[in-house]
Length: 205
Ligand code: SIN
Ligand code: FE2
Image 1: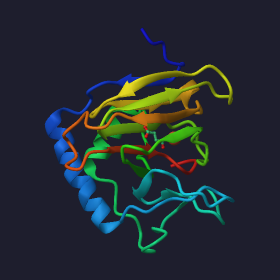
Image 2: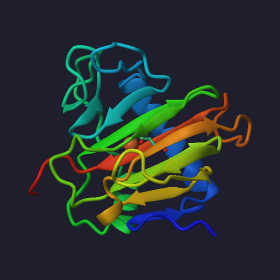
Image 3: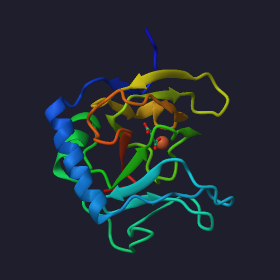
Image 4: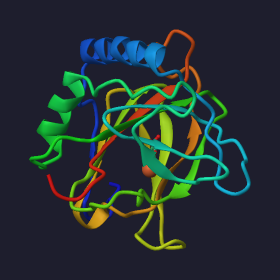
């Protein structure tokens, strides 16, 4: 059995098939309003392999000149992000143990070659609230480490409908996506994986 670092919870199959189908429909609507774009690494401007958008009052963005940050407007359309849909607010309420609503929902789309290097989610002011992550579509190999770079890591698969909560002592654990397993789900017509991460950004209410 895989023992996850303290504060990290993996809930396999949290969303049943119908809930996944409905959530994908909702995400399609969000992406129509707030199109996926290619994020850039700070300083180098190197494109990331995932495509991103957000919903919520704040969205996480990154580009060469201004780096990692949260902002209220889509960097390309300059419009406010669409609101976080009720089904995600409900999910947050069910698993986060946090009384406040999430302020940001990052939408990452992985094609079969995309990956995400080990990193911490630490652009928020408030680390008392957890990060809640939802996987849809193709299975991935997810890696979690310790709260310091270079510590031990463990990897496990995340399938469509799985939820991961990074909270408490696990809130600042390094994590990333090593690879996508193509054609492991038929949820997304053209394959690939969607990951949604819900977060609190500001301290206080
Ligand atoms: C992230 O850390 O932003 C994404 C994690 C994932 O895709 O599962
Ligand atoms: Fe992350």
